Image (cartoon, helix red, strand yellow):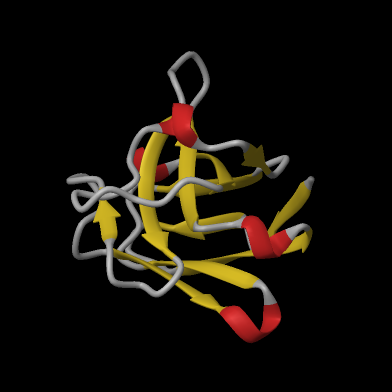
Length: 127
């Protein structure tokens, strides 16, 4: 079992920045990839960014490419999503997720492959 808890969400003005954090506990040694997903009301949960353990394989949704950066501090079992130039359409609940399977070369973008999920943190971007 792996437990994930997000933090860092909040209200920010358009063009502003936020950094989300995700702390992992439990069987963290079993995690081979991390991901960030988001879900707006009435919409399906969608992938934002993902990264394998050594950072060699990363994936970004086209809508956030160049603005968001996924990273992790392995010594702290903490992963991050740095968000810059935020837009109102980025408003959503953001979820941290982890998978045990290895990432394919084109990135871990399929939410069905993620086994563990945090409760989510709200990000609201005002215009």
